Image (tube, rainbow, N blue to C red; front, top):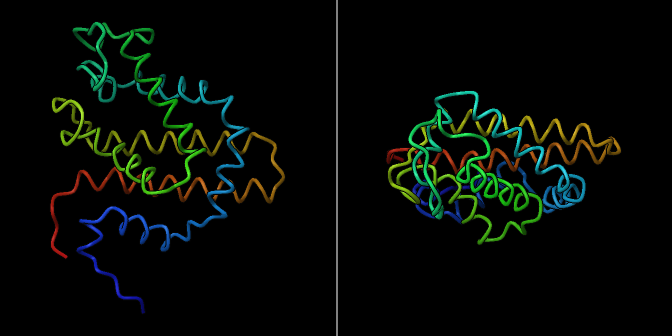
Length: 194
């Protein structure tokens, strides 16, 4: 039995990611499968981004989080969710962020810099980073990640890849999205005893 320093998993991002990747068996083969899908997925990023924002726009519980000024955005602000259209500059700004995120998922080397980036994706949706007035509840983040996961997996299933490649790619993305989900949810946890 391998001994795990559980307290370190809560305080050391590299140790946490190493533990998770080992536990889930997220390997170099998975990274290769993800990178191998990049050429197929890159042209579909705008469609995926639009689908995500169409979904977010359907619910007051998600759309309201786009009214406050997003970190790095300097343009005009809406006064309410009802004034926030899909073509508003702040939504266009956020869509660009999501596009870069999706590109990062399929091209990243999964080194320390990438792990820090994935961790920041979780942190930025809380008051711990970015605009301290923005706090996206975990239930909304889980809903979003579930939707993104389904959209990515559905897209992969429609690429017409050889079956063996398709299975490897689906499994790799499934593991990756679970890793991302952990790096989101960890920022919502209060300190818990080990």
